[in-house]
Image (cartoon, rainbow, N blue to C red; front, side, top):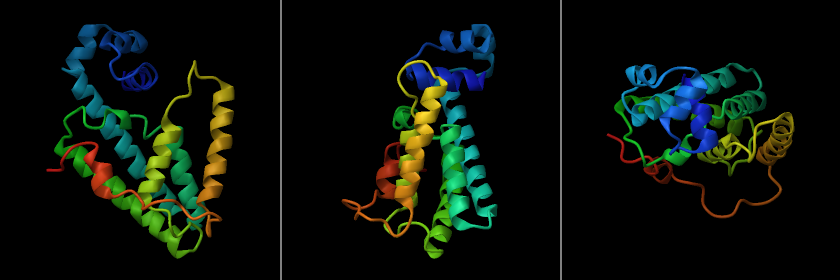
Length: 192
């Protein structure tokens, strides 16, 4: 049911009716509402799952011996499960204490991964963990039209171009200041 909800929301938009989710999951509306009383509760659960998976992906990246390979594993894994696909709902749902806790865990683990890549000299010094999070958000959005193999190939090609752009030393100075944590988290609301 959660996989169907993620697919419906990220392809049809967050105003998609819950009936579309029930249909995609092959369950009745009553089954859906017994598990999730509201659409907001369902979206909160999807956010928690995405943050858990992102934290696990960062941990897997840290387990890699090579800092660059670990960073790439993290990014590719998050893009593959579309970790940032729910970002457009920022500021539209209540952020629970559990969501903030998991967001901090995912953020701290990703920061360690990025710091390790910086210290090894393999990641551009002007790239931040938030830059990488926002990059993954962009690659998490579905392409227009029904998903197909060509979309996957194009996404993989463009992700490879983007990954090469992250490599140190970086040929072009990045414009502007890096995004701030306050701006990034402010999209979701105030932390408790």
